[in-house]
Length: 547
Image 1 (tube, helix red, strand yellow):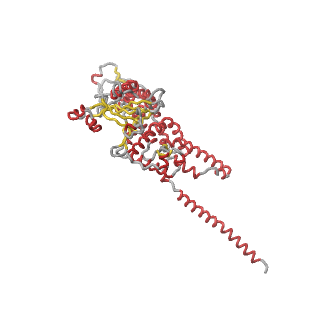
Image 2 (cartoon, rainbow, N blue to C red):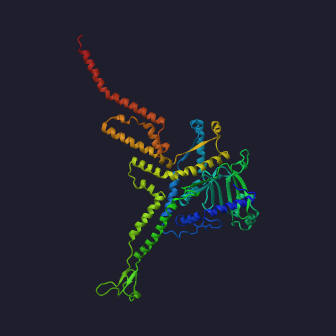
Image 3 (tube, helix red, strand yellow):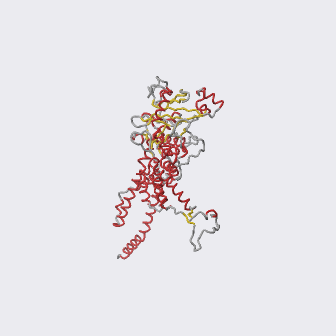
């Protein structure tokens, strides 16, 4: 926290942002190199004030091969599908207290809250899907993504992915981000729409003459000094929020948040660094090499298709024609020896092999090849699929698993707090109120299921071994230890099988009852001839006895 009494609050916030911007100058240079080669729309947008491209501006001068561009797009789609698939409930809430978690009233309340979270999260006005995808793209390119979550004036949620060039932040002593500054432009019209009567008079004057003129602002969010939880207004909230006009050095608006409103995540971190490092950073050398190789191959390909001519002297060149069907007199000696040849070119296939090597590295870093295995080898057994899924879970969990704790967990906390303040959540059960409403997030995404695939793969391997032993010994007791009524539903859940595709316990009980009845009838039918024979034998025996 800073002493605002000495220079004024707005001036101190502006100075602090300038210090943070200076500290990450080298990192922004790294981001610029990545943007030039992988995400050109972000090129030249990392510095403060005015470094924003005109709409539709081309920034593809450094790109000769699009492998990294395409791989980055696939990376964001893969991460989105693994962590936040739109067609499923990828998380649920449950009470932190195991005893409370068994209460039917508490379970029903959390089920309803989970349903409402997904309802408002994926509402059209919330804009979550597009902003979430944009966040994952930033994560893959620059190693850091940030999403601002707040409430709509009419109720509900809204999301905004923050450009990495606009956000500056600090970690606390535990490595958790608790201070953020967003440095961003607004036109005079946009500033008035947001701040209304609080808009500085200089901006209001410009609104009348040039409503599209841009001004710069800072949104500051940090832990509140002298936090007083007894207060009922925004001064009683743990995080303070204020908007500062950079040009006029004044605080425009103040407020507060119960939870930190920015969900900021890092792909991975280097020691001593607050910002993340990305797959794009890992393969930047490979991307540069690939572009240079592509330039060389293009030159050689051009020479091969439109070859350089070699002649004995320049006598024939004056009248030499390269048109199809042309006749060039004097281009050959009387004995049939050509006087014009072509300059030999290099082996283009070697160049293609070198490029393929770099492409494989790039696709590996962006997880593309990891997911090509299942599509390229469709004729796999169920066991092989489980094994591949298990391997993917092992490889992905260390990095993508971090997004659950650093991005999705805080985001869900913001959502619950926002909907609660808006009165859109049902009344909390008394038992849960007494436990202060503590809850845990249980993830049920494809990534979570991939992490559990070890159990399913182990079960399948064990059952297959037992069946092989049975085939040899014909001893059915080797299958007795397995509780298939427990195993099959859990394996189905791990594999992501929809609940609606499963039979209900009542339907299963009815099928088993019918099967038992049919077996009993079949047994009676098979036993009938024997019983009849016994009855006939008994009758004959009684008839044969002397009177």
